[in-house]
Image 1 (tube, rainbow, N blue to C red):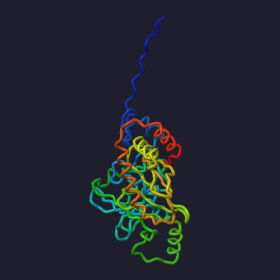
Image 2: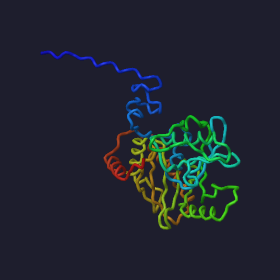
Image 3: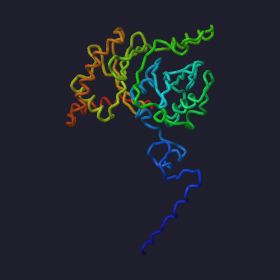
Length: 311
């Protein structure tokens, strides 16, 4: 007996003020609303800083660098100081002189870090000088404000300044004993870090007296970068020189961050030259389109075994 086809009833139109479940999600993910924020669970935006100038350095300030600042410019031309972290891990503050500070290392995050930071920045732009900034809830429930890409001048350069301590928190302010004590305690937790001159998002750090690393946030697509790293590894060129070794990599906010172990006694700034040479070799390897050789495939498998995902 032939089975008769049945027609599914048409979906009811969304009520006024509601979002059609089949419409693109307003968050900009590219997914339908019913499969994104309308599902009650939204997949994280894998590259929240994509489209911003200096995306790898944004990732580095969020994940790698303990004490650093960079100057941002809003679409309306207002200057904002981006900080790795602010006192008490607050998302933003406005000084008495009207200067805005935005902290990139938030204690909690939603599915879109860019929207979290944009929510905090939008609130700071509206707050009176010297007044507390109240961006509302930021974190698991999702942030309600705009994304950074909607607020910032995307043509402005992004230059990171690494600091030895958190003295920039209180520039020009008179410190009482309690504040000095708190600042000193925070400073004692700062890991020595150097941004390697002439390179984007390459940082030397020394977590202890006998260990040091070069961590390098890369903007290339992951598969192409892994192939290039594998070619260099198979050729024994994936190194920063004598006494160094490739330690592995981690994924952070959509980018791959390779890590090298380096001798702790060598000053951080001295690794800029070897890193530039490696960068040139890597650039050449990225242009190769031939299939990987057997040795290169074996090297790639080894690289993957030493790669972890942070977020």
